Image 1 (cartoon, helix red, strand yellow):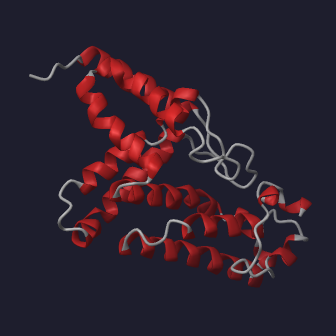
Image 2 (cartoon, helix red, strand yellow; image 1 turned 45 degrees about the horizontal axis):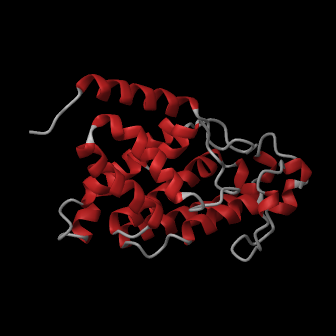
Length: 237
């Protein structure tokens, strides 16, 4: 019989949930208002459940795929929760400390028993190594969701480097599935369509500096990305 420590389980969930709610994302980005790790995870869960039937149709032989992706999404940022801060994607060096992060994650869940470690740790590690279909889908959804606030709040898309970064961020996770590729293309289309709209309705935009007009003339599909300008306010570009 598997041992179950309900007290430690409740304490663990409370600790990680409260920490996740306190850790802000998009620090230093003048174009995005709001978002923390807990909100990010909730967005990822909603994104997954709304495409789950399509993924099941696309991968009918992968019976546990949705469960694996769901669990992976919910734990993939636990290293940031453990550390207490989120490093913005544009400046983060990915996969630089995979072993260290996996060990910290293992220690954080070890209080829940070996059966939990054996269930969660391989999924956490696979996400870092991108060596499973579930991990690749989880990473793709993570990038898509990471772009959504920038696209929803729009003004950052006027900055050609912020727009270009968002495009490259999802383009690099293309090819995992037809379902996620469709989401990626739709997201890129949203970016291009908004920039076209903003260029033709510039006088209707609120709180946008006049110098931003010229930024909308730039073809972001062919624009060479300069990461140092992603978080530069429009009036300084």
